Image 1: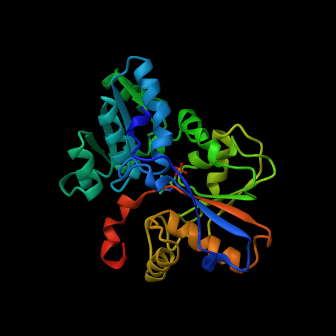
Image 2: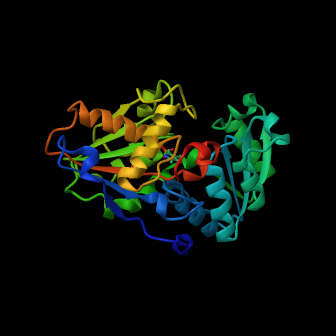
Length: 299
Ligand SMILES: *Cc1c(COP(=O)(O)O)cnc(C)c1O
């Protein structure tokens, strides 16, 4: 299965121009580079789920997402490569006649899409609804939205080789918190783990992370850099992305990693990190989502 990856992840030091003289070092774990479609953390959250389906004689992965979901397109593509069928339950019956670029790609990759109302979508974690899906699709392994299950956490834990003890702080964007839960499960207890939420009021994610991870290591969630809410952005954020690219030669995505790096930069400049900090930021990918702002980006 690992043959699906184009490239192994690697750690890239950021330019001192970006963080000096406030901290000692900032690096980025480039998960965005592993694959153009099954990018970033999504592959790691999916791989144990795909293995589970295969070893239990199931030929389909059924999962959930919104019209711009990186998780849906990653699932569509990874399933195709693995020889599995994929079904996406999509929030918003209205999108059916007006597919977003993400959903067009899902369909083109062979995913069967089912559009449901907001009310039905809201039942995506309820037993009754999941049982009825299981009856309709007995050969499907059902994966929660965003790959947020224990197998997802386990897949992320496979990144432990990159989470070296020399790092004092590990920083990651949070959506469902599954990636952060996986990182917490392999972290040495001396490192601090910081999560950056791209939505308003994202601090609630902390409870989900505690549920998903079996670790008792403390962590922090910051939700002040949401830029108006999930999927929202402004010119200041776009300009930040272009400057970040000029300095570090790393493209960020508009939904998650740009907001995280903006927050980290502010924290660095405000002296939130000690001068000795050696920070590892996780680039969770998501670059396919930049099509909506492509005209305003240099990359
Ligand atoms: C999905 C996604 C996340 C969120 O990951 P979780 O494991 O759900 O917290 C972060 N960054 C990017 C780029 C993503 O696509």
